[in-house]
Length: 67
Picture (cartoon, rainbow, N blue to C red):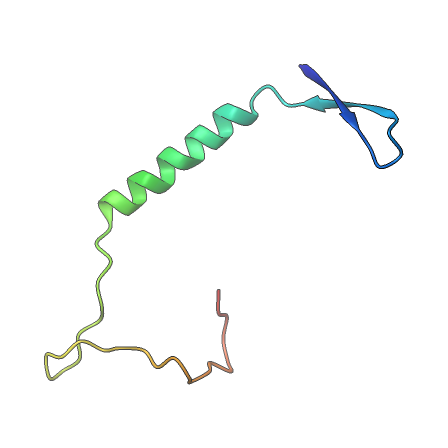
């Protein structure tokens, strides 16, 4: 456990404990996202006529889950 001294708004000392595994978790998350981006090909969808489908910037999706 690492203990860091921080100053709060009233300039009193506050002791904050930082998780030891925080850096490992961040590195693992980065590796997972990088592997996913490497393995997946992100391309525009192609319609029946062979042209790429470009989403509209002004239309709104009112139903379903949008993330």
